[in-house]
Amino acid sequence: MKRKAVYPGTFDPITNSHIDLVERSRKIFDIIIVAVTNNPAKAPLFSIDERLAFVRDAVGKYDNVKVEKFDGLLVDYAVKMDGVAIIRGLRAVSDFEYELQMAMMNRKLSKGKVETVFMMPPEEYSFLSSTMVKEVASFGGPVTGIVPKKVAGALKKKFGQ
Image (cartoon, rainbow, N blue to C red):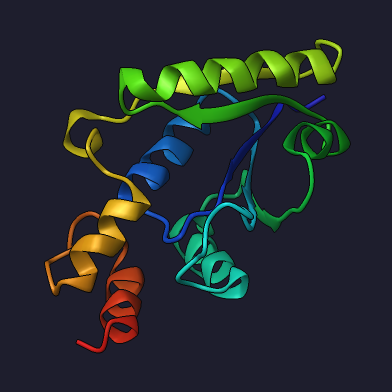
């Protein structure tokens, strides 16, 4: 049986840090499911279809990575997909408290079937978030080297640059 992991997020937009995490996760798990969702607490800049396309373009070259849309409770989705783990990125200590609570709740709700694996970004991406990318792009700042080329172009277009 292949070990599957779910890497969830809004990916609005996908960044090079997200891609790095997918690449490193592939070495640990047999199958990675990048699960793109709409977070009701966020107002995404890009539609779900645009985000799915960006993610597929960025990680579609890997035969053991699938990209899917999901709605609802993440842990239910992970169980439904036969996932053994949820992958979460941690940039700073400030991320840890919230992520730890979520990991414990997901383990409880799945009755121990799903664990959470925390991964840290490489130093060059430790500051990077989709929110920060959008803010920089909105002011005409350069995002080359921190997002895929197609995403950089789409950001320029969204912000009329």
